[in-house]
Length: 154
Length: 183
Picture 1: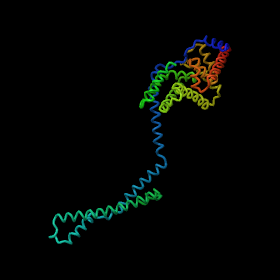
Picture 2: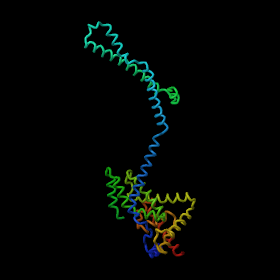
Picture 3: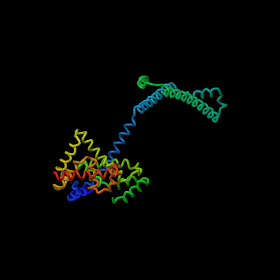
């Protein structure tokens, strides 16, 4: 293309040089400035991810968990309010009084005590476990109003 | 381009587990000046070019772990830089309600008053002539004339056929010559 060559020849009369200049130290400092920018982008991304994780569903789940904990705690307080620690011992005392003192030695007394103690404890634990399981089941499978629960607990 | 060997080094690092950061640092070192001037010729203003250059490298950093070598590394890098520069111009138009011709006029005025431009009268005239070209044509002209890229390299970056690149460059030269003779 002869015409094109003529045009290029005219252009070639102009010295081909880079006329754009940069501030002093621009390219030397650029990597560190870029690094700062990338760090800021990472921090912004982490913050936005954190905020996104607090979705409405997760918030309601967290509120339900808090409500459940409060309910269990209050229920336990209510159920255990009349329990006498001495109740564990009184059946032992009752057992012992059925015997004549002369017929019970230390070993027998200890066995009697531990048997009674473990029975009472296991019964106590069994009762408590059943109650807790029932409460958990109720709370898990029943819609609840957290405000109402808080009101009930007051 | 004399950096094909170094591009290979970068690709080796990319394929090596745990070396993405090293690969990225090497890319920054190899390409920061070339990309800067490529962007600068599109945007003219230094501060705008600095912003876009940073945006470009941030995009490269984010995309580097997923780079699948479907194109050459430098093609991919230059494509990101070009798109970022063009998007910047688009945003500028939207922000200031500028028409296409007004953007180029504004860039031309920036050129004259820019402290970071060191050309004589003829150089300024040439740059103004280039600014009269449509965007894509201007980029093609810059890459061919100032960056001395090959037609197939420009074709890979811009996604235009080699024939299209050649035709566009030819017309760009004609327009510039006409501008220089009339001004």
